[in-house]
Image (tube, rainbow, N blue to C red; front, side, top):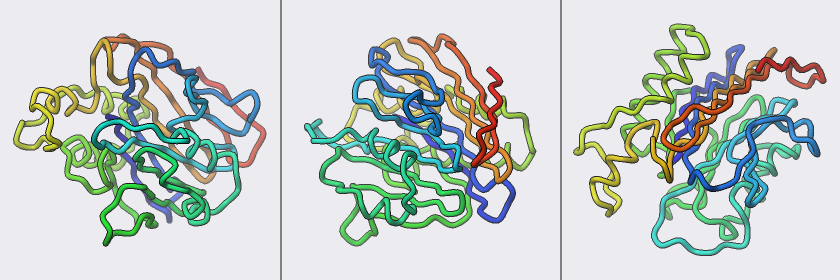
Length: 261
């Protein structure tokens, strides 16, 4: 049950700020965030099972992130959703053209954010018939999890509000990581109703999910500035044990890179 909190301010020196948790089975093999050896302009973690990624940015100032869309019984689809993030980061298409090129029926349910340095687009392959599949987003503070953008899940609503407060206070980057470590459980009446036992929703309702089987694997902060891009990833082992951390800072469209971690 991943979580992406983000602030979009297109007219500022830092158009996009992201704080995100990746929740996954701990046994699923993954590589920590780094510049990819075969595609050195991409900075992202890597799913070693299917080969894609869930979140990343590029030296050219592109950003993409993905959440799964909670649906019914799992089914088999031809393509891995992680290809969607990789495809955008490795290419040069506009956010609109890339979204239009996606054949949604080839993938299990997804939410996808695409940023090209100027415009931020949300697209999904699960939406009501009267709603657009894709839309450009206006300035604002947002929270996205495993339902449609705008779903009033506590971790999305409260998280977006707290992200905005931290951003307004010009806090240190570590405070965004601390926000993602929040294990507070919302009141039961605020939990989503997905036909699951309330105990399950309660367990998954916090920003940070601590579990030995399925839980938060990585917390990532990305600041897409016009002059500087900052990327930090804190990984976690089963039961919330702290793993490795990396930090990168580099100028967009520049070969210069400072490795801080």
